[in-house]
Amino acid sequence: MATELNKTTFKSEIIDAKANALVDFYAPWCGPCRMMGPIIDSLAAKFPNAKIVKVNIDESPEIAEAYNVSVIPTLVFFKGGEAVNTQVGVVAEAELAKQIQEML
Image (tube, rainbow, N blue to C red; front, side, top):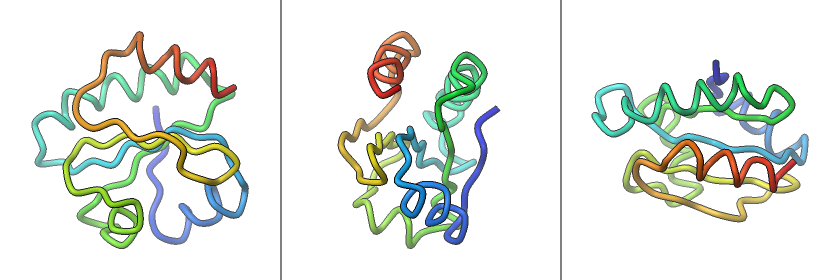
């Protein structure tokens, strides 16, 4: 299951750690986000060595704003703690798995 980060943990886990990561920006009330939830959790289970996390935009709006998240779900890939790729909307698990393998 993907770990949920907030303002404090996001900075330490992603930015300060210079992590390679997939961050799912979501909200619990969002239908497409609920579709992505099981996909994100499945990927976290399949790739235990990858950092796959979630950020609830209602609870951490400052993080969403910092990465220009205006539509959810938004998936942001980080490399070395820097955002390098953004995808908006529901994305197939196979496509994300391919991108995660390239990230590792």
